[in-house]
Image 1 (cartoon, rainbow, N blue to C red):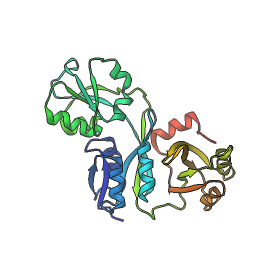
Image 2 (tube, helix red, strand yellow):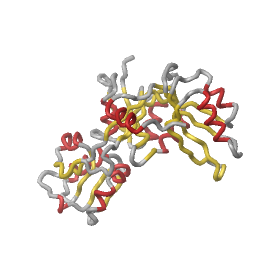
Image 3 (spheres, helix red, strand yellow):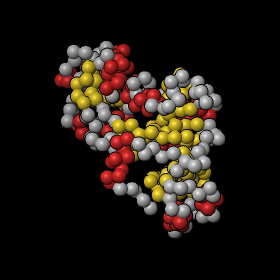
Image 4 (cartoon, one colour):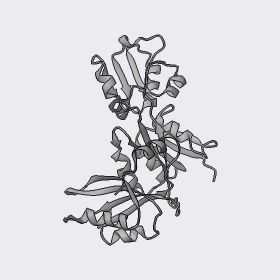
Length: 287
């Protein structure tokens, strides 16, 4: 199926943009950028775009929970995932030296992932901005020598900026997981990964019984995170990723022990490239 438009978080030169460009069917599509994760997902839900690309998890700073929340409310589905290695660079106008910088712009995640580097330069003020790509564009557009940005090498090339330092992220094996957002029906029935929203009874042992279902089905729990339930103070829902040969009735099995179950998508686990080698080395995060 020919894709006409893909909604993407951030701006040209952002990591979301790099992830979008790696989609097999992107060659004929127009990429439209949005300033928030929710706006990308809403664009897909309103049929303004055939699919969307948003970051959802970073190996250093954890999950972007706003994506899960927006996805659950939208009716959209996860159609796939991709992992992008994150190599942050310090960018500035041509001819600017590091000691001239005062204000460093980047997405909040970018600043957090480069915390040690920023703390080593206490004179600098880190300023959260829309995305890494938009931060690089701002430095170029403003033309102020005291401004810098944290972004990637491609953004430096796109906006004609100088790279003052490379690989400034705290974690040398820094990856971000991106989700391809689609409208239903988009599930791969033979996909080996599923993302679920689960609400357990507020009683002892309820989470244990959920994990029992995954164990009995031979599924590997690779991600589990709790989120507050609005209107029910200090009660929580769970977002879970499970991998394995997916039983067709897995949702029905979970319904027997959960108050609420929703599949956010069944898709193929991304197992290619360097991220697979790192996972194989450290072993699985199993139940």
